[in-house]
Image (cartoon, rainbow, N blue to C red; front, top):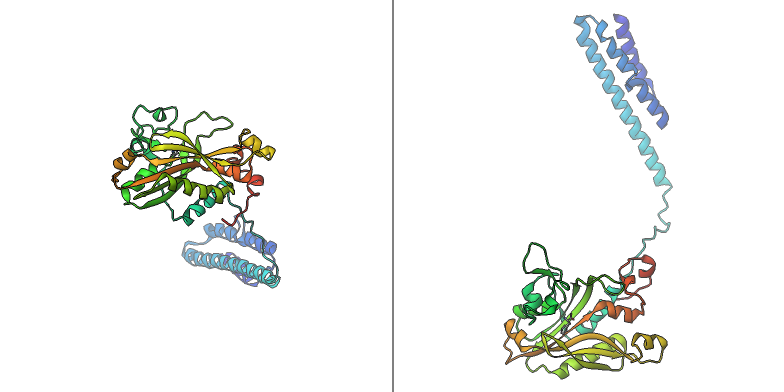
Length: 343
Ligand code: PHE
């Protein structure tokens, strides 16, 4: 029996004398002592031959053997890692240039919107917001759009299934209603955001696009104010010398107009863009219909105002002379990288 004890004790002294240095030697150490076919495992299997009265002592010996092998293995590994860290630190050059972090660029739609916001902010407008998932009342009823109006047709509007009266807003005009309900005049806001229309997806139209709404309500606001505000905007935005207002119709403004900017026909590009007329349509606008003021809780005898709404995509195409609207939505970095702006 004593040779088994001898063998175990020898293993213990051998273990203490081991000094593997590199990771391969350390792994060999682990396999030799702690492996499934290792020394400790085979000594454990000898347990059967140990007489009962010595089993306890042998067991303790096995335990300390196992513990010491495990501890030594962990210590050797830690030492090796520390050595590797020190070597890395020694070769670290703190004066070397850093890894460059590629900076993205703003999306052309964002740049365009920021320019629009900047121009109106300078005129005293502030930015307002409303939900993209709207209710029928704000999107249509408050905007003086009767039940049987074609704009309410399923063809144009995405309705939320299982939620009667809930839809994806078809324009930013519902923000007008929300602001009028919440604030007292004078009101001077613009409201940019996404809008949705269920149009057939063709090369030209999208189910989702962006608009900016404008609303100005105070005592004595006139059509002249509308005209001057929009002229200033067009000059700042496009550098155009003049605008043209053509009579139009919107249920929520009276009178209503479409605004064109003058590009001229000097270049072939402008000739084509304006179909030979020199004028490019930019937005819809008008004096807020008194009925809309009343529906939204504003005294139409005391106050008047104007509103306008424009698509941002159209302005971006014009501003950057982008030929195809689809480029704005493809997220091709080779295209997007071309737009840099401070705004
Ligand atoms: N909401 C209209 C549209 O989507 C634009 C508009 C806004 C017209 C405000 C007049 C006043 O076409």
